[in-house]
Image (cartoon, rainbow, N blue to C red; front, side, top):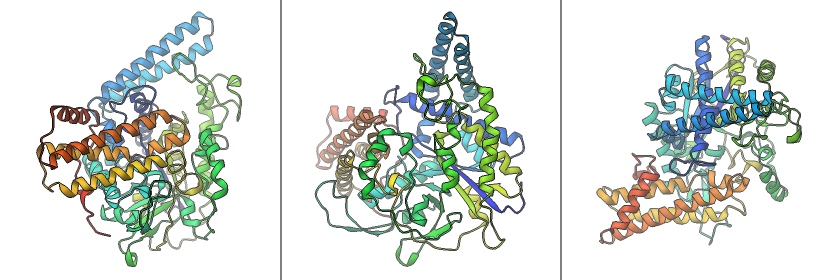
Length: 576
């Protein structure tokens, strides 16, 4: 490890899934989170352990959203993961037997490979991690292998939420849930979709119902500072201007087609000559008070991992994501060639894929080092590389092993040193302040993916629910207890779930549009009925037996955030 590196490498992985507990299994229920655990989270934990055993630090930043942590710690999760692995093993055994009977021995070998994979994952889950993945990540943090950061409670898209109390509740709930699971305060915060909004006179988008007069809204950074957060991450164009690259369009064909309808309307901002490889301070509060640090996504290195066509995941020897064998949905084939037809895919060869990892890791670290033109004054540059965690192992099967190889090389490199973002700030506190515009890492750099002609109706309903929640809490006593308190808290949970940015994303990409719309409407209807029960009680009437039964059913189904605090939904801690 370099004593005086010329450049730091800050890899950030963002682990998130919407709430799926008790909301079905396949294809977008519990199988979704079990798939992520077996293909991504457990391989990442193995990566960290391998580095520790070799005397190296993982030295990365790992985001685990509160809604994900709550699911991984749910009492039903271990049995669900066991059942998922056992089902995958059963299907692999059946596929192997059938393929052997037809004489297709090479493909049968791939079925056997997957059987061994899921047997190994299940064994690791119990024997190495005690059926507690959150606890395993927490131990990595205690050992200095990685820094865990938090996020908004349900990954709400903060710039578009209609009330400051909604932003406050998302942020504060996220911080409190982190403290419950990790036993310390978080230093960093992943803004959902890297979406930021400064303080200004805000009005709901015109597409979302009747016009409302603008009101002064606090900047997202202000809520982070009040919650004790030290830093967050933004996309490059928020600092430098110019055209935003986006991170999703090339993975979702429907999104690429939708974006073509809007691209001509999106004018890139003027470019500013500001170094994206530094940490900065920002504050949209009056007089620039209470600034928070931020890091900027490095575009050159990001493209090498995000792009399935130009980046490493598109290498012909790596496991292909799209072609699957049915029944079972196993991936037996390799990428083969860029944009090759599914029928042209060759059989995957694990050994050949492993041989590609070192050269790709070498190239990545050399790319990071090429930006190490530090003259010894000020803070050394940091190339901040944020990715969705699920890229590693799910979209790109060899991703965790590539990441391990990168961190090995960065540990031993003369000029490059891998570091968590919080540790970088401890060594190099930023001094320069920069004002940030509104935007995200989505296509066009603004809110397009989450607010468009297909999703505007969801925001209308969110704003209605937020207003209704505010009205309930204005009438309810601050120290409400008993059944009324339970009703209000469950209504708050349903509101948070309604605000999840996942629903708009899934609608826009057509990846699971029907599922997203059903889930959104389900949470809206649950909130509406709970609000009606609360209004009845506040009017002096007792709830019916059916009301109480509905409350109990909803509490059992959407059982996250047991310690939810209504004060964050009621009043702003620091008024605007």
